[in-house]
Image (cartoon, rainbow, N blue to C red; front, top):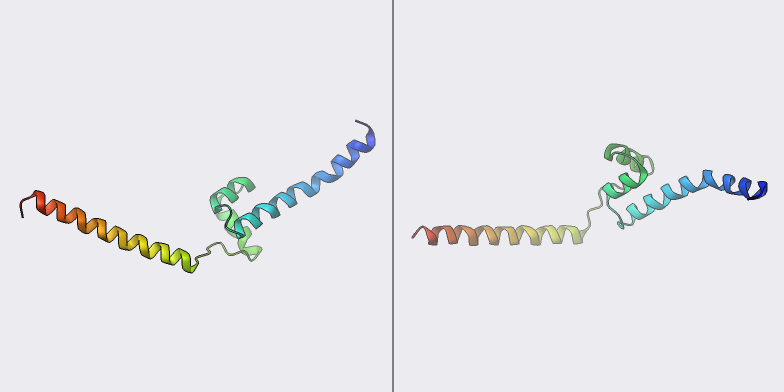
Length: 95
Protein backbone atom coordinates (compact mmCIF):
# COMPACT_ATOMS: atom_id res chain seq x y z
CA UNK A 1 0.00 0.00 0.00
CA UNK A 2 1.52 3.31 -1.02
CA UNK A 3 1.25 6.52 0.99
CA UNK A 4 -1.55 7.92 -1.19
CA UNK A 5 -3.72 4.83 -0.72
CA UNK A 6 -3.23 4.90 3.06
CA UNK A 7 -4.09 8.59 3.13
CA UNK A 8 -7.26 8.08 1.08
CA UNK A 9 -8.38 5.24 3.36
CA UNK A 10 -7.66 7.26 6.49
CA UNK A 11 -9.54 10.24 5.07
CA UNK A 12 -12.65 8.07 4.58
CA UNK A 13 -12.72 6.72 8.12
CA UNK A 14 -14.25 9.80 9.78
CA UNK A 15 -17.19 9.63 7.35
CA UNK A 16 -17.91 5.94 7.88
CA UNK A 17 -19.21 6.16 11.44
CA UNK A 18 -21.58 9.10 10.85
CA UNK A 19 -22.91 7.39 7.73
CA UNK A 20 -23.39 4.16 9.66
CA UNK A 21 -25.22 6.04 12.42
CA UNK A 22 -27.47 7.76 9.90
CA UNK A 23 -28.20 4.45 8.20
CA UNK A 24 -29.16 2.80 11.50
CA UNK A 25 -31.39 5.73 12.46
CA UNK A 26 -33.05 5.63 9.03
CA UNK A 27 -33.68 1.90 9.42
CA UNK A 28 -35.24 2.53 12.82
CA UNK A 29 -37.36 5.43 11.54
CA UNK A 30 -38.61 3.22 8.69
CA UNK A 31 -39.45 0.47 11.23
CA UNK A 32 -37.00 -1.95 9.64
CA UNK A 33 -35.19 -2.57 12.95
CA UNK A 34 -36.26 -2.38 16.58
CA UNK A 35 -35.12 0.16 19.12
CA UNK A 36 -33.15 -2.59 20.86
CA UNK A 37 -31.34 -3.49 17.64
CA UNK A 38 -30.64 0.18 16.86
CA UNK A 39 -29.26 0.75 20.37
CA UNK A 40 -27.04 -2.32 20.14
CA UNK A 41 -25.74 -1.41 16.70
CA UNK A 42 -24.96 2.14 17.85
CA UNK A 43 -23.35 0.96 21.09
CA UNK A 44 -25.91 2.86 23.18
CA UNK A 45 -28.19 1.92 26.03
CA UNK A 46 -31.92 2.43 25.53
CA UNK A 47 -32.03 5.78 27.31
CA UNK A 48 -29.14 7.15 25.25
CA UNK A 49 -30.88 6.00 22.08
CA UNK A 50 -34.14 7.68 23.13
CA UNK A 51 -32.18 10.88 23.80
CA UNK A 52 -30.54 10.70 20.37
CA UNK A 53 -33.89 10.09 18.68
CA UNK A 54 -35.40 13.05 20.52
CA UNK A 55 -32.52 15.33 19.46
CA UNK A 56 -32.99 14.19 15.86
CA UNK A 57 -36.80 14.57 15.97
CA UNK A 58 -37.24 10.89 15.17
CA UNK A 59 -40.35 9.45 16.83
CA UNK A 60 -39.37 6.69 19.23
CA UNK A 61 -42.90 5.34 19.57
CA UNK A 62 -44.63 4.88 16.27
CA UNK A 63 -48.06 3.41 16.86
CA UNK A 64 -50.11 3.08 13.70
CA UNK A 65 -53.75 2.22 13.15
CA UNK A 66 -52.55 -1.24 12.05
CA UNK A 67 -50.79 -1.62 15.41
CA UNK A 68 -54.01 -0.64 17.19
CA UNK A 69 -56.05 -3.12 15.15
CA UNK A 70 -53.56 -5.91 15.87
CA UNK A 71 -53.63 -5.11 19.60
CA UNK A 72 -57.43 -5.01 19.62
CA UNK A 73 -57.56 -8.41 17.88
CA UNK A 74 -55.07 -9.82 20.38
CA UNK A 75 -57.21 -8.60 23.29
CA UNK A 76 -60.32 -10.20 21.80
CA UNK A 77 -58.43 -13.48 21.33
CA UNK A 78 -57.04 -13.31 24.88
CA UNK A 79 -60.56 -12.83 26.28
CA UNK A 80 -61.90 -15.72 24.17
CA UNK A 81 -59.16 -18.06 25.37
CA UNK A 82 -59.66 -17.00 28.99
CA UNK A 83 -63.39 -17.70 28.72
CA UNK A 84 -62.67 -21.10 27.10
CA UNK A 85 -60.22 -21.96 29.88
CA UNK A 86 -62.71 -20.90 32.54
CA UNK A 87 -65.43 -23.00 30.90
CA UNK A 88 -63.11 -26.05 30.84
CA UNK A 89 -62.29 -25.57 34.52
CA UNK A 90 -65.97 -25.45 35.41
CA UNK A 91 -66.73 -28.53 33.29
CA UNK A 92 -63.89 -30.52 34.86
CA UNK A 93 -65.12 -29.53 38.33
CA UNK A 94 -68.53 -30.93 37.45
CA UNK A 95 -70.43 -27.65 37.48
